[in-house]
Amino acid sequence: MNIDQLAASTEEAPVIKLANLIIVQAIKDRASDIHIEPFEKTVRLRYRIDGGLVDVTPPPKNMQVALASRLKIMSNLDIAERRLPQDGRMRVKVGGRDIDLRVSFMPTVHGDFRRFKAAVDAPHGLILVTGPTGSGKTTTLYSALNELNNPEYNIITVEDPVEFQIPGINQVTTKKEIGLTFANALRSILRQDPDIVMIGEIRDQETAEIAVEAALTGHQVLSTMHCNDAPGAIARLDDMGIAPFLISSSVILSCAQRLVRRVCSVCKEPVTYPPKMYEDLGIDPVYFDGVTLHRGRGCERCKNTGYSGRTAIIEVMTVTDEIRKLVIQRASAHEIGKVAIALGMRTLRMAALEKVREGVSTLEQTLIATASY
Image 1 (tube, rainbow, N blue to C red):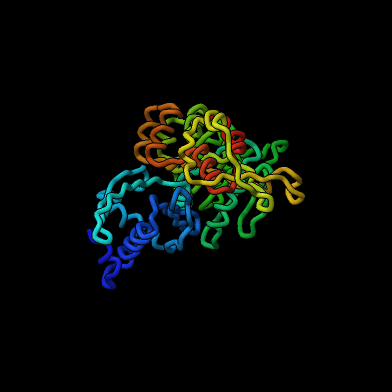
Image 2: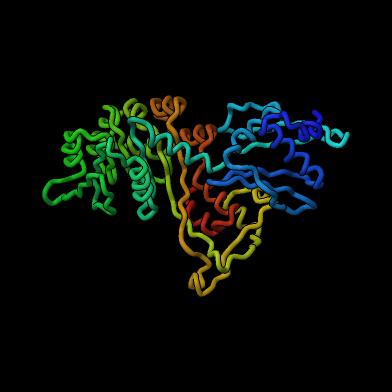
């Protein structure tokens, strides 16, 4: 493929021209690697030149998917497979020289938002967000409710207590002392013809049964649970006595969430970690090849902590047909997790490490937030 000629052609489709120009420019700049990295609102394009990574003008975000597909076509890879890593090769001719390129695709954390959004947009089903106290579960659900808040929908919440008031949404606080438990409040709420119900937390079998029943009868139900990871939510419902076939039919998405501290932007500086840190995390240091890691040195702004603010890391498990089969077979959370990862789920540990790669957080925070991994 003579991409010198193709890059110069004005008749080629914009994405073909873009892919060719990226490759031609990299070769002209003597780059050994090309990194195309999608982030939430932007795409980053970097060339490794003489061992160092250099930022170059990135492609527009709206061409990200088309560009990835074009590069897959050039490498004889499956353009429909966006959940699993893929490796391939391509041979191009530039300046009369044949050049062999090795191509590697890795699904990254910013695909998780699309999974979550798809579940939130679904007409019915149970969405679970899990994690310890103070991990931001309720805030995530409030964000989802804000997204759904529309005069067309009757949205009702039952919480203990109502943490944040949202105009247009009917919110109920439980009062155990007068018998207004989650379960009793839910029964009353379901008589009010809601479209969407948010349950502050599923703590017992009775509440779990009503939540599952509501999801199966055409309601969208959002709730939180206390467990370690996304697959663990399935096992927790099973432990509560919910029949596996009901779990598999009702749950459409399970998430796990933690908060990690953000590196202070005022005193941010490069950091080099000892090999022991990578050993403790069970990761290959190669994962960070070519990436400058950062920490906060400590300053007046961050009260000498090196951190300022927090960001969420989220593990998102879509309940696919493969996972439904495992749920019905009462497979362990570990087995379900393995299949979910093969289907593209990013674990909390993976999500935390991505924040480290982006310079947003640190390996110390990864150890603290994902200690159970």
